[in-house]
Image (cartoon, rainbow, N blue to C red):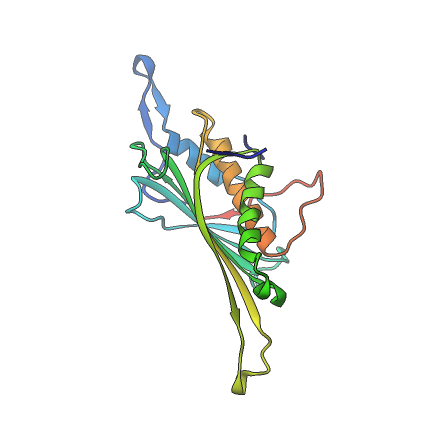
Length: 219
């Protein structure tokens, strides 16, 4: 299990559901609480999140978001400088590779400076941006896995005037260790950490201390 230096501050196969509680009462299911956390999470204004169809074969319950970083969040016409996807899976049977009932599967991609394509440590740096974001949020996680790919594209012939481009792509999954009853807050924190990763890939500076982020989820 990995531990960073607890949390900070649409839908797949299930909505809000209840389970029998003590003395015949009903309690909100853990996945419903996590879903609330994702839908109420706060993110940087440059990060636009939108709920998308979730995978149906990976787990009994799932929710997926697409994300894009747009430098000028005041206009809808700007191009995204980083894109990605965040998927939260829940299986009460705790699949063995997960080491728990939850799993986050994520993807993030952004164009980088040309010199990054020649840096042998680019992959290690990309992975550290993820773990640093989780640690900064004081989160607990387990069974991390992933790949970092750096792709350099050069143009020739009639296209030789085009400058070289470099894209860094990070595919990662990890098991969030969530406290029963605090699934909403802690899931929101994992989403926030992933959003910070995407903004780091985009080259955005950290938010100044005291600046409050606003919600970025669009239905």
